[in-house]
Image (cartoon, rainbow, N blue to C red; front, side, top):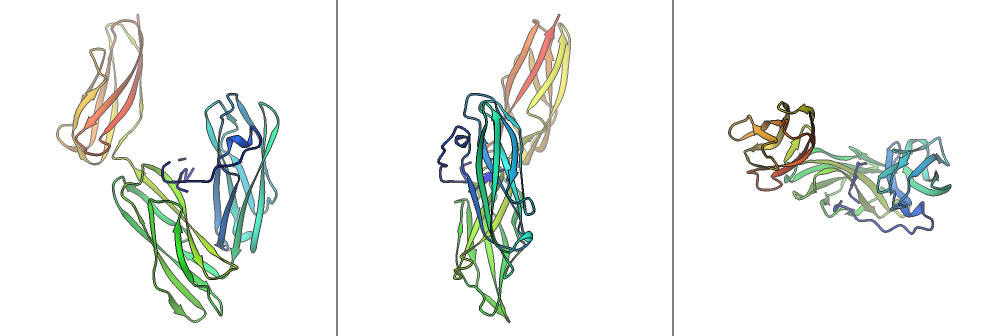
Length: 327
């Protein structure tokens, strides 16, 4: 699956639906995570996402694990209003064990009534495989760009394992295994990974699964992370203009950045009360806007302003301007 954030979240992923038996279980989209075979010493992290679909306030009162030596788990938010979501983030240290290890995570709820949900994570920590670097980290790349990264997988032993295939959990990721390189009691393979140019904006993670001919290590997990930057970003999406007296004017600045030079061609949602002007002339990758609220009729002002540029794809962005005109 390809998720956000890396803990949030979108069309880059697919997951089997969780079979819920209680109201608490019904908030989770999955109950387990098998990390497969991993090089001993890797730190393994996975967020179990839950969304409050109960229509009531939900309180997570406690999170505990069956093995505190190798695993920890934390709820990012303790209380959820209807419609809100959070994650229970599990962190497993594969350097604390050797072989297959399963750890249970117990999530307790105290509101709207007591309930407990059991999750589990599992990994096969091994000394006969190494992945360098251990994560395919793309870092930050621009929306619309196609980017590639690689990592090396090495197997050790008198009869080293062989790679027979590779599979990605996301259609936005294309992976390929290079030819084997033999050297003594080890064999290495290069794993090349390419990210499609239409990968959505956001912070994403997914897993690549390297298949081997070793029944004790049928597949090796290689995590992937990337942050896709939007073409346009604002220093804030909400501009607060405060209180303005009738007949007076309040001003605030808003910075608009682009991954390439652009012109602002239209500003929609403005009028004589709320005005927006661009102090930057021509095509630039940074524009500074001035937002003005004129004190006319007393009352609240809450406007959504759409900024339109000459960028072909995703060339529009919105912000909200808020203020109050007082006598």
